[in-house]
Length: 251
Image 1 (tube, rainbow, N blue to C red):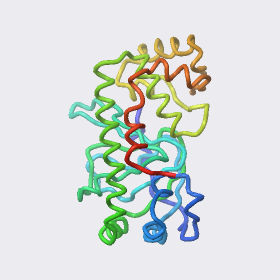
Image 2 (image 1 turned 180 degrees about the vertical axis):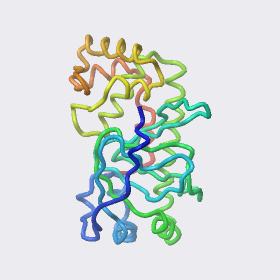
Image 3 (image 1 turned 45 degrees about the vertical axis):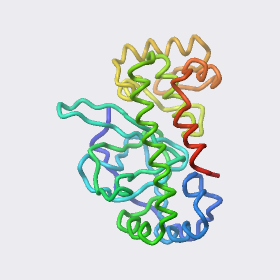
Image 4 (image 1 turned 135 degrees about the vertical axis):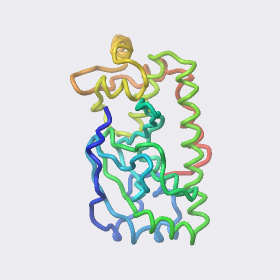
């Protein structure tokens, strides 16, 4: 389950000396040198463990995070306490999208699922930088478009595809972002992510394991054959990824 007691303060060191080409976040790497230099004085390198909460429902966004390899989850909440993951973010993206639209908070939670480092910038410094560079704002809005496509594709998959296909899609998306074959994912976590009962997750994982796509262990999943996962996911996977490639010329 989501760990509501693990809200993390931003901590790290200023990275004004950082070399843009060394950064493993694709959005920052793809910025023009001029726009990156506008952000550089405010960037702080942070490190987060699984369960750390970066944004809480209804609370002002304190900082924007540009993850390096790892994975963040965006979790939606209903008024009765029901919750489910609706999107994930990794080194292709950023948090704090509400700030791009002039809104200071979101009803969702953003938390760390696969430990990662981020380059982060305080919200006020981020807002100021957006006002002096329209190209920077437009570049980040293109990512927001891809994020919206991911949300729409998730709704389609939840409505029209099997648990096994949805599970394969989610594992592929996690693998894309985590840069590791061994993913620290439990059945309980996967149940939350897919919005299905734990028994359904157990059955789905067993089928994927029998197909040779993965190997389960206590507290984690090892990706064994990505091609098999892609074959199982079928049309469930690939639309947001193609949209990212189409509209974002990222390094």
